[in-house]
Image (cartoon, rainbow, N blue to C red; front, side, top):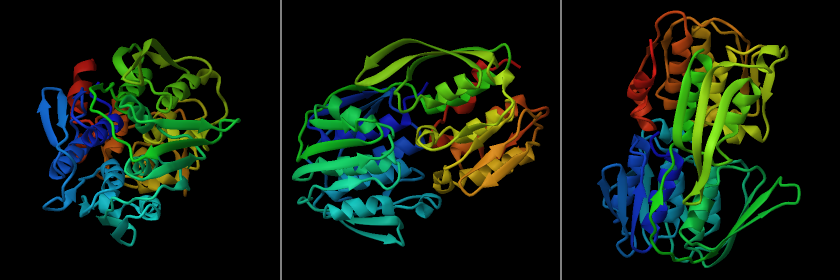
Length: 422
């Protein structure tokens, strides 16, 4: 699998803040991650591609960019880079494509302004002009929404603040930033409440740290499409090597197993402070899914851990007894597109029975899907999820605007063709 997109973003930014030269092995060369590279280069970081790797050389601090910093379609780039820019002694403007310019940014503006940075925006949306300061103040901030990007933005700013910054998470989110900061030697304190319902991450700034090489594991969110396809196609036997198995990212696997998927995990190990292993999937669903009569349900704290895979799970729901209901997932409305609306529309076009809610959807199953023209609405996750649906549909399907997968996984269609027997 290509390198993990979430980890690649963070590796490039943290390596650019470190002192010296870092080698990022198996970097994700998707459009989103290349947007991060481009922005860092405009800020003065020395970055060179060497085959499947990236070499990042710091040059004694960032400098003001000559032009706008274009984040493309990448919300990760914009939100996390805003934290980096908050501690710089210059102003810079972050912009992006039409989809990104419609996405909410108040969730990062508020904490970073509390730390001393100043923002100009379009009613809380990009373009964002950030007037940074080298006198950032530490804060104690409770996240109002479960967001690894917001948490990471604050932590990256905290590296440049004088004093102890605390971020309180009521619900656990991806912890790649914390793990990577620890890998680079940044003193980090993580305290969980006695009932594990709340986590506090603290950094004492300003923090300086040396460069370090890192190996980026295969992307589990990208692997999810192949895992789902192998599960749905009887007779499949798929092995995925060196995949990231961070516990904040593997809920998809445990949910599939609870629905009857035949998934085994082997050779689990720690590499560069991330958990990596081998995933084997055999086709067909076993009990308990075969005995299920009630609709399965996903909500609450499960949602942040499944956010990228929810459209894919909706596709899978069309093939399981009782179907699936997804609630408390209103965050899907403000992704690259309204993923709830896009999922509902495309499932209905394939003959599925779907109910749409403000915060989710319910899918009845099992049902035979029919081929259709799929409209991803420019969203890579929708395009990939419905490519899986097309594999089990009764007739041909067409994925319109299929190039949108390049945002996260440019190798997707070629790799799928290479492992699928017709």
